Length: 93
Image (tube, rainbow, N blue to C red; front, side):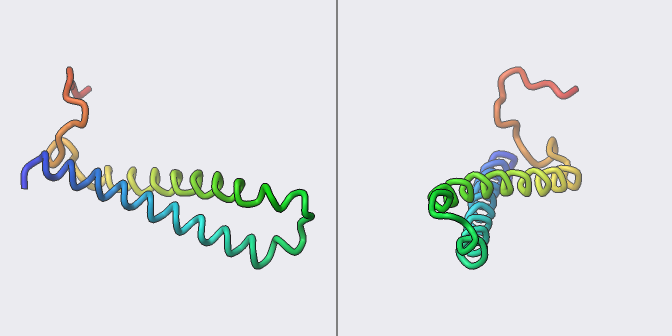
């Protein structure tokens, strides 16, 4: 495979990974909220629960994505296997 195909596959895989992590975090937090927290929260605050769960799941998934991406980038030589996404005036420092 060439660099362009590697880059496209990496971007598609990374997108699917962050979507899957977001869905898993949202599902886990929703189950936690529904099973344990909803009985201890008043009616006025319950409506804000899912909005807060949505925001927290996105934040957690981005943090997990960053950690995994940094780990992968330390293991893989990106110049050897991937094309730059933005090719204009690309210079490596």
